[in-house]
Amino acid sequence: MSLSFDPDTIPLPNGHFIGGELISTKGGIEMRRPSDGKAYADCPVAGVDMVDRAVESAKAALKSSNWGGVRPRERTKALQAWADLIEAEAATLARIEALCSTRPVGQLVAGDIAVTAEQIRFFAEFADKEGSELAPTDDASLGMIMSEPYGVVGAITPWNFPISMAGWKLGPALAAGNAVVLKPSEMTPFSTVYMAQLAVRAGLPAGLINLVLGDGPTTGTALTGHAEIAKISFTGSTRAGSAIMENVARTGVKPMTLELGGKSPQIVFADADLDKAAMAIAGSVTFNAGQACVASTRLIVERNVADRLTAAILEKMRTARPGPTWDDATQYSPIISERQRARIDDIVRAAIGAGGKCLTGGGLMDSPGYFYRPTLIADVDQDNPAIVEEIFGPVLTVQTFESEEEALVLSSHPTYGLASGLFTADLSRTIRFARKLEAGTVWVNRYSRSRDHILPTGGYKRSGIGKDLGREAYLANRRTKSVLISL
Ligand code: NAD
Image (cartoon, rainbow, N blue to C red; front, side):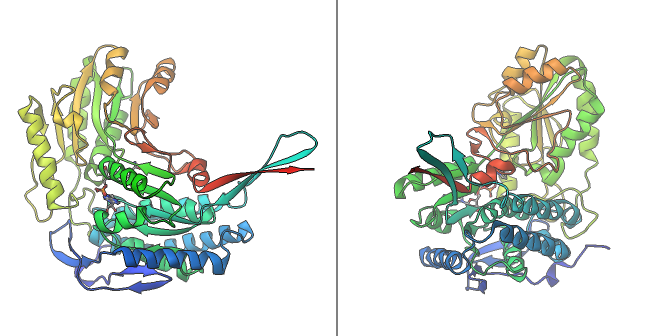
């Protein structure tokens, strides 16, 4: 079935979503479609009052449904029903997402949406499997480490994979027995609103998921500083993560999971399967036009195979097929906004000005919308802007090395430590590097996530605190209480 659609015909669920109701307001932030630059909607901006209303709704839903106290299997079943409905409604969800975001509709149903449904089911299964523990104590006592939900969790998501990011936050928080107030990005909120509507249709208590739309400074600040939000789960830039820490410190104390920016290296040794490495690295830097936190952005290759590998990557980068996100043949995405595209171009120019040699790309595409050409820059020092900055676009740098020590020095980034890739046939070297690479993820002879959702994802350094996915993400949504009974 073709998923292609006319972007002017898609109804959008535009409004805050509180207590199971869509609340529309007038005005807001002007939104433009990345694929053609056309203005199509205004994103409402929730102020303190609307955020209060959402938190009250979450508290009321927890109380009336006893979501955190029901038999855990009931939570599992309810979340599984939601995942089933997300899959059944995948075409509609995909079109809403593709209209507003950079995700091509042809990649969404089998990709982002299928994976998100699977991840919600994965987290749902923890509800009746992870719980309290008895503590080893003497015969005269009984010690318990009692596990409990937090209550109301505040979540904030970025624009780059709106459906997936909403699933990463909502799945574990709800399975763990919490209610959520979530603020999606002001650039791509509507697919998250539709997901929340599907949750209510699937039978989850109204008010368990509440969405407040708006920007960071207004809505985000009101949410993270709210006294009755017990925990924050954030994905976005390191800059916004720091602002949130500051606001939380100013307004109270609460635990935070922060999934932040990255500048991930891919280290390729001469003994690696170079075709496989080229495919993985070019695929990652062109996927979503490099707008992924773990995008491959810094190729570090053994000098004697650098020309061969670079040529293979160049060839693959040039084959990415651009087009509007509503055409299901499109493979290569636009950049999210004109402003972000200008920022990418500024950094690329600065990188070339600082001595970098542009081997391909390095400019805007001559087409409607905000497309940027896949770009490869060689001859860059460690202080070149293309190495230092998270560009968040389709830009890969190339550096070469002659020894393992040199490769390790080049791979280390002063700010980020999100993901890293290693391509080699040497098992001992693999273990040495897995131990030494300063990153929350090390992919070996591949450069992408698998569907093994048990593997957590998160950053070292200023790439973040805590993990999404895996058992860790579920446990981060529960807190423990020590209970000691004298017998
Ligand atoms: P962003 O930080 O500009 O915005 C992310 C979200 O935070 C948005 O909803 C925004 O409105 C909100 N926000 C901004 N300032 C805020 C504030 N002061 N208080 C509260 N909320 C605030 O990021 P973006 O441009 O939407 O997304 C791209 C960034 O996200 C990149 O840095 C990327 O690496 C990162 N990211 C990280 C992961 C990960 O898993 N580590 C995944 C996806 C994206």
